[in-house]
Image (cartoon, rainbow over all chains, first blue to last red):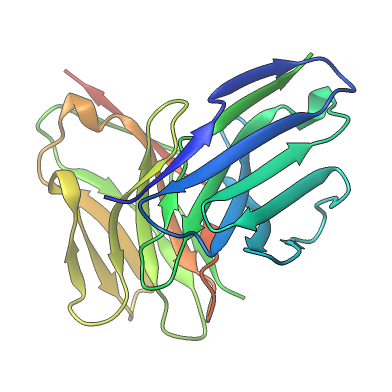
Length: 114
Length: 113
């Protein structure tokens, strides 16, 4: 079945550096990719929605300059956390959906900023 | 605005016992409702969903949920818990006319031998 492959599964970075998270859709074209953040023992909060070839739409309170989203192709969307700080440490999950397909979650990325 | 509320952040049951995870929704339009399961450090797996039609929805791993409009509820049940059911469970509603999911706060299910 269709799958969204998310990498890396875990990443540790130094404060002030940038981290890129990739989500690739396998066996389907992800026209839309949703990006979620999940803090420990909390629910998933939608950060932004990206449509292939368009600028992402960010939810209220999410800094678009800090969380850069690129969705240049129907099979790849990326989230870059720029100038990461410890408070950005979280679990980031993507969810891809296409035309006439179910939506699929990636496996998630555990980001730790030290 | 649409939302879901999950009552009980933790539920503990014995292996073989009934599992009941509660979810109530708020929506001014007919909702699309979902239950997802999340194992530690993993993404979410769809258990079941309700869109239209039959109000009792059967999902994977023996789970089912019933949409009750009069009670604005979509509780998840399983007749007999298995150790492998221990995980975090999320109820979600789809924002009207979009593909966006709004999640509840989650319920951690523990299963004791």
